[in-house]
Image (tube, rainbow, N blue to C red; front, side, top):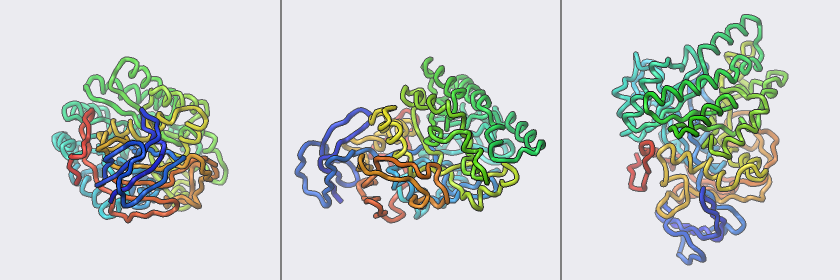
Length: 469
């Protein structure tokens, strides 16, 4: 199918110009002024932005956690992503205890089979190198297009790894061209604080944050940076929430070390006081790291503006408030950690980043699309608007007003972190490889259109000829 997008304002990480974009055979084949190519579908984008499809490098769909499973499976989660202008995401495979990495990959692919609405890749979360996967098997994953390893430095007794496992994985990454990702919190210290709080009868949601102070995030971030230096591996710190974690990343980047960091949409808007909301409503905001003191929000805006932090993800990990979050009504440590957000990232960052004058349109595209694509082996096939790139495109209406609400979002969860927020600017049309995914309020494409993308190794580029399984 051929599509001609006429007269839109094309915005990439580097450029901003008015042009026509011609799409043929799933890729962008021509960009220019007043194109007169015959097309099966012509889209008038006058007065609209034409953006590269968003790339979300941090999501959890159909993931077991805390005695339950995230409410969004691949179909509902990716539908939410599509309506929010995200056309590619990288989801986390959580290695089950005792399972090999191959078995874990097979399990996660089965979850996605026939349900994919957008394109996706996988990170491998390493949890067990004793009874399950081996370092030798881990080293084979980059050749299968899984080019990032995730390690949890928190969740003691569940997902947390020791420093030996962390360091050995970093050594493998250095040898194989993979990127190491860390959830950076000091899980040992947090475990002590949680037990102390519960022993004192402190069970409300706010104690989720009070037992995970920002210093535990800062310490673990610095530890991971120093260990990655010794191992010689690149490092990506996920969901940075506070000044204590921004500072060691900033220092590492000033020194020219191979260290990158992301934050998530919610950390700009939700602060600690949300956890204090009565009638257990605070449980909606129990995710990890927790919402911080409001002063950290300016720190994070400055960090993404100055490239101390290089990406904004969602960490979409959605649970029902009524029925899943309530598992921890009498014990904050049993509240499933996670929040929704896949659908609203572009709207919120456009409204409060671009329209509020904190970042430019180019920087928005860089944070939401181009940098994640480059860091995770998807660029230039994904993350930009260029001849030869996948025709993952968003026609964005910068003037349309929208009120964000759980009543209209496409996630299965029963609440929205940004409930009632009014924004100006929203996706109007979303294309995946030249196929219309979303048109207005309608999902046009059917599940199954999305594909697994085998990603390039860290620092390498992914071209159209790269095999797609």
